[in-house]
Amino acid sequence: MKQGTLLLISMFIIVMMLLNSCNIKIINSPGSITKTDVSVVEKTPYLLLISLDGFRWDYVEKYNPPNLSSFIKSGVKSASLIPSFPTKTFPNHYTIATGLYPDKHGLIGNIFYDYNKETLFNKRNPKMAEDGSFYGGSPIWVEANKAGIVTASYFFVGTEAKIQGIRPTYYYKFDNNVENEQRVNQTLDWLNLEETNRPHLITLYFGDMDKVGHTYGTRDEDKLKTALFELDKNLGDLFKGISETNLPVNIIIVSDHGMGDQSTHNIIPIDSIENDDLFMTIENGTIVNIHPKKAIEIDTVLQYLRLKEHNFKAYRTENTPGFEYIPTNKNWGAIQLIPDFGYHFWNQRRKDALIEDGVTTFGVHGYDSKYKEMHGIFYANGPAFKDGYEIHSIKNIHIYPLMCEILGLKIPESIDGDIKEIKSILKENN
Image (cartoon, rainbow, N blue to C red; front, side, top):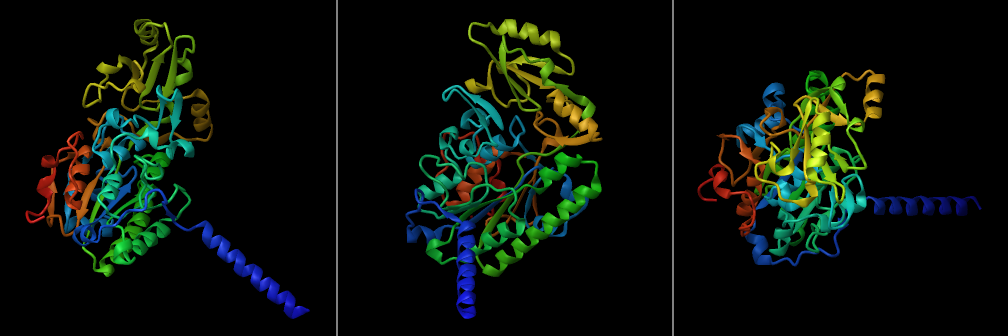
């Protein structure tokens, strides 16, 4: 009887272990299985795009993390990476992926109103993040997939969505609780697959520096350095593992934006500005989209808002500072509220809660990229790149055509990026 009981218990444990292992397995996208062309596979270089969310342009020079410093020394670096306006996470990750400004690719904010769908997009809503109809342009993994190149992603904006009916060949649904070590190990596992199943394009995301920057601001050097050196160790393990594969992997490291400091007392309560009779308000912290109600004149709304101006200004959208172009996407709304640098829109309840918790300073981004604090990073290393080469500050729209060039993909004519602006970092025989 005891032996039978022990056998049942053992079988139960084995079954539970198998079920648990199934719960964490990678998603092999059934609608995006790449039709691999062996002749293409043999000729296609390897490219790993790494995003370090919220990594400001000056962190490496200031703190000297060993692995990143070594990576840069033998590769390429730009003085900084200039994000698109607004300098927010979703718009800029997808600009890097498509070579398009937010006005064209459609992800104009972390939150925005979509007139075609008559709904509010919010990046925190998984169903919306996975809805490919919000995503314009043709991201790099889609172009690669069309060309018969196997692709993979461990978290990158847009990779969970079916865009043009395509997802990366392998991908994960975003889960902020996944440890960096697991992301690194999976990337190395992908590179150790059999050649026909091995991805030649991988996108990878780490959010550590954004989290610590938002929480403590950029003046708490102990907190920043601790987070940076932990991340640097993860990157060191990744670099070492890639070296051990003996594959010719090109690595590009970017960030979506930088980080600035914000006093809690400089929060502008959006509640004091809202007027549901005149307009709809979409608050993104450093930019507020104003959508006048039907039959309400823009000038009427502007007149109301300009009476409220204090540490912010109201602009017609086409006249709003920060844009590198004249915005035409209807989803911006007719009017934008732009706070002075160092000020930020939130509601009164959130401001009061921060003050009550004793928070005096925290980190923000989203401002005009003319402020250097908003700039991110661009580093690269691998067989396609020059050694020990430095370039001026570059706009993030130019990364997409660079990736196309490395992977041997045709660069779409409709993008905003220009390969000529960045091609000097490549070796001449590339």
